[in-house]
Amino acid sequence: MGSGGQRSVKSRAAGGGATTVAAAATSAGSTGGTFSVSDFQKMSVDDQFDLVQKSIQGKAAGSYYTWDTDYQRFINNSGLDGAPNLVDDKTLDSMSGTETFRTTNENRAFPGKAIAVKTQTDDKLLYNAGGQEWYGKGLYSATNLGSSLAYGDNAKAAVMRFKVDDSKIVSTSVVDMWEFKEARDKNSLYHKLDNAGYDPDTKRAILTLSKGYTAIDNEKGYLTILTRKGVNMSKSIKQKGNASRGSGNWNDLKDYK
Image 1 (cartoon, one colour):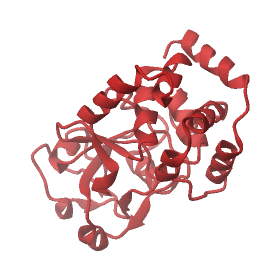
Image 2 (image 1 turned 90 degrees about the horizontal axis):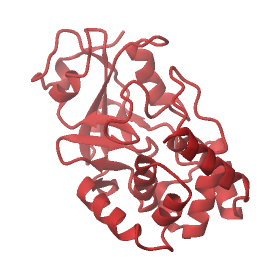
Image 3 (image 1 turned 180 degrees about the horizontal axis):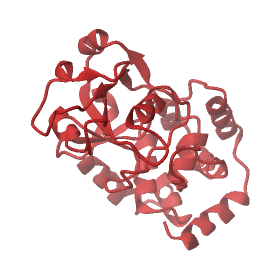
């Protein structure tokens, strides 16, 4: 979003307070509560919109980049962000859901492993940074391990493993359909977000969360995870080492020491 659009959103948000429901949601988030996408889905459109407006007044998670976007502030302050459910690999193997992988590189502030640890443990996380926003807002992951490894710049890259409940994944074509329909419905959350000046990727991500989903399948082998809360994640962090695109066995990768 351009700076002009962001000022517009902030000024609109400052003009009105959140409802009791929205305030309760942000309070739950600040105290590690159990507010979920299902709870967000059950809210009225007005309460959903009030929660968005209130949440963007907070600060984005401090991290290795200052990626201060409306979505970043929304996810960090709405109560919808939270650490994933960490399990060992054997338990993750037994769980249902779509398996997906994320590879992170060292940056100017943290080594790849530290970023992976933050993904596992931080209550509030920076969702878009080095990967920027090529596929919208959220954490990018690949359902094929070899495809994920291709994003590792060198042997020090850290590799993470997740399983996302299939009932919480929606295809990008379905989201496209929602956008087309709700852009024309003045009573919809999407229409309200559009009128308030939110950028397209933020509107798309919040719309998806409001429907009770946590990830978008781009239908080309990649998942964008919009929130870690409710997602199952391996306790193990692997090191890319000499593995390359086409390598595809998690157990063959060495644990990051």
